[in-house]
Image 1 (cartoon, each protein chain N blue to C red):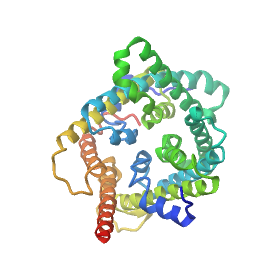
Image 2 (cartoon, each protein chain N blue to C red):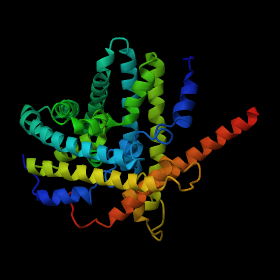
Image 3 (cartoon, helix red, strand yellow):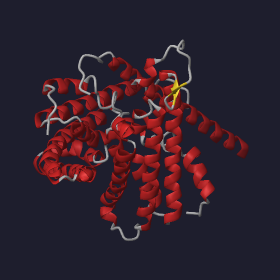
Image 4 (cartoon, each protein chain N blue to C red):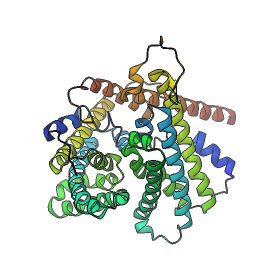
Length: 208
Length: 198
């Protein structure tokens, strides 16, 4: 594989191959925690930390792990970092940690982390793997923030807990309930796919 | 340790209708989206998930209350739970191969996938957070599994009928799947208020 610059990795992981919207990975937590912005920010930071460091660690160990047991090693490394995130959250932000509930522990089974470890960190040196994981996490965080911005403004009339819409605005209760999360992510994916299709058509048309 | 006092029967029905794994808690979405284009495979996966959730819930409950809590190693729970799930899936697969080869042929391919299905770990973590007793934990597992199975079957049935529908090119695939799930979740909002277990 040709060597990629950090900027190329950024472009690839945040926009072109956004893990949530293009590869449809890590949807569970993306939908579950996005009813308020502060929760999604914390979740995004937690996931970015775990992905970046587990990609780094697994890439540094990649020549020493026997192929047959690599899945279990990956899971263990990821679980170790998730435990760190969980302990820090419980100590520093007990309120948010309680609201996130099982979803912090579920970072372990988040497909993004395993996906990056398998697809990138297994073949590349530690530093690019670190950035690959970091930017995959940032792309995830961006999607979460966009989703929760819409849901929190329309559902509670606030941003990060500060009320910005007047009392006369009728709150859309549906926005903080599960169905709206599905509709919104469906719409996001539609926009991203339509853009990708248009781009592909354009580059084909240019080649003729 | 104080256990929750909700009746196990209520937990069973609530985990199907009002706290459905997919439609309310968003767990197990990856395989739900990826493996729902055909009804037959969807039922196979649903059966396998139900089986594994029930077995791992029971084993994890015993391990949590007999090993983790007495030794005060709660911070290690994630690693222990995930190892238990991986080992259980392996053992179930081997036992199936030995005793019910027919079932192994139809479910076998799904079993390795299930280790990283978040519905399994999620159900264990819910059971711990909500302080369920053993019977409650098992019925919660059965209900969650059946709820997941039902949701993936409904989606697969709808997607099979939609194959010939004309969709905007960007919406086909994952986009429309989420919108269908949204409509299903909207219908399930109608159940809210019948039971509360959270």
